[in-house]
Length: 158
Image (tube, rainbow, N blue to C red; front, side, top):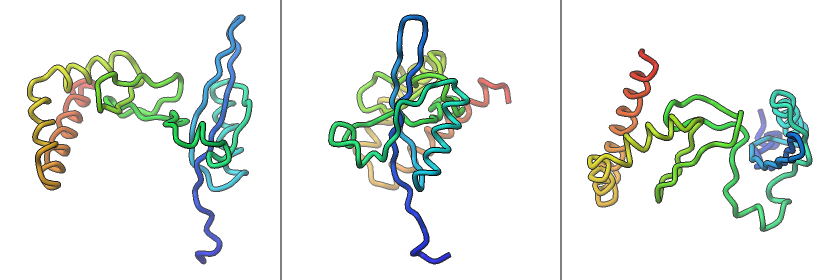
């Protein structure tokens, strides 16, 4: 395929509304698409699966400065702890400083906090990461990811 014919991925924003009784809940999500028709297909498929009403969707760069510099929840997310894809509700963020993890349930959040934030070992690992070289950081992060995978396997009894 020629490079001229490749359409780059753009960030898009979509706004959904849900009517529950007398309340209207409005949510904003971000996703990647290669053009208007692909974005339309992604939005409509998601809205149909989740039984949501689409208010609007636009390219993020055309939404103005109020949205362009903001972190917005992805349309479909992966839980940091159990690594399952979810889109049924707003993700639950970790409240600790400099932790950008998101979770599908309170239980996964609690496991994450217990494993990483309440452990003295985790504090030591953070200091090593902050003071270490790039290679040390990679090794520590790989160790932590392997430990997290082991806990995930225990959780699902694999």
